[in-house]
Length: 137
Image (cartoon, rainbow, N blue to C red; front, side):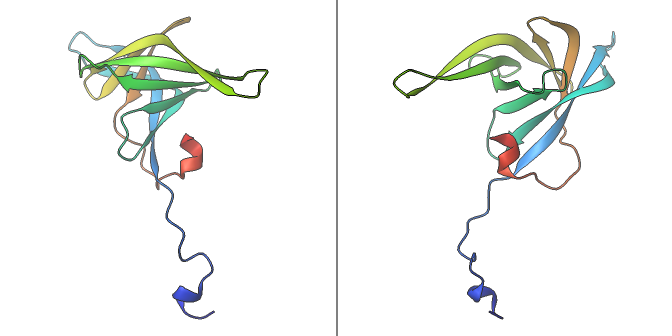
C-alpha cells in the first residue's frame, strides 16, 4: 500500500464543512454600532446553507435554528425543534417559532422568548479550520 490509490478509503467523499460563528451579549449604540459583550454561544453554518444552528451555553442540550425570513431579507426567524417517537415507532418533528432576528451591521440581533438579554450573532466566522459535519448535524 504505497500508492495513494491503494489507500482503503480513497473513494470516501469529504464531509461538508461548516463554519463557526460567535454569539454574544451586547448593545446597539445610538450610531447603530454593536458593542460585543460576553460570549454566550456559538452558531454553525454549513457551506451553501442559509440555516444557522445555534447553541447557547446556558442551554447546552437545546439547539435552535436561525433562518432568513421569506418576505424580508433583513429579518430572521428563530425556531426550536422537538423530535419525538410515536408509539408506532415512527419519528415525528415539530418546529416552533420562538424568536426573531434582524440585521444590525455585521450582526444578527436576536430576540428569543424567555431570554431577556440582547443576543448578537456575528456574521464573520471565527478563524479556524472548517469543522466537520458532525458538529452541525
